[in-house]
Length: 216
Ligand SMILES: C[S@@+](CC[C@H](N)C(=O)[O-])C[C@H]1O[C@@H](n2cnc3c(N)ncnc32)[C@H](O)[C@@H]1O
Image (cartoon, rainbow, N blue to C red; front, top):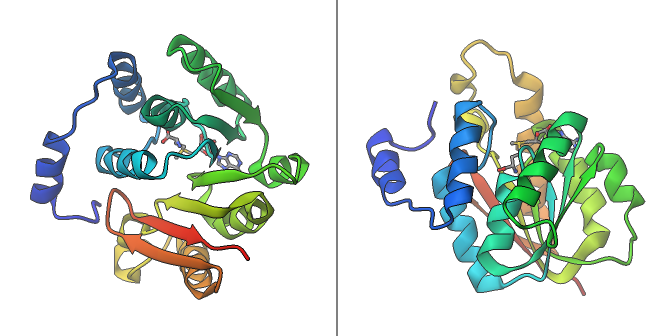
């Protein structure tokens, strides 16, 4: 299910253009292979944010084929550290990143982000963090990324509305996602309750949360 009105989504998607031919090819490849990558409207939103924020260092949790990390690097020349748990996927992402000419900017770390984040130099800081991996673990990703957030970091999480299921059980027609829905609702509640973060949830793509961090 799409969380937005289909006519409006189709209209917005029709406005989408990709000036980088190789990125366009990678998007087409991912879509053909049913690899879940950021939706077109989410990509446009992220690009506008990247241009406003101009982050130097981005941490991404969930690489897949390397599409979004290349979008980030292409958009504002930022360095990207991206974490992928699946070994074959991480290998494929490295090849794509090399082919697209971003290997100087984008580094793929293979491993469960819950381990990789602990192993990173805890003095390292990221200006933007993009969480786009296993939805049940968003809270753990956030907490482990907290020490790595720069003073005015922006944290963006994808798929937070889970095809509408976060908002209402009626979209979980077979009752198959009870645990992940519960966890996502708790996560959204959590990030909205933090006094060091200002958060908004937008019905873009599959739901995107944007949090501005203000560390003392
Ligand atoms: C939605 S895809 C990422 C799409 C990518 N951000 C893009 O838009 O091009 C999610 C990826 O996260 C990976 N993943 C899931 N759980 C993970 C974890 N705990 N640590 C690291 N990667 C994980 C999956 O293997 C999958 O490739």
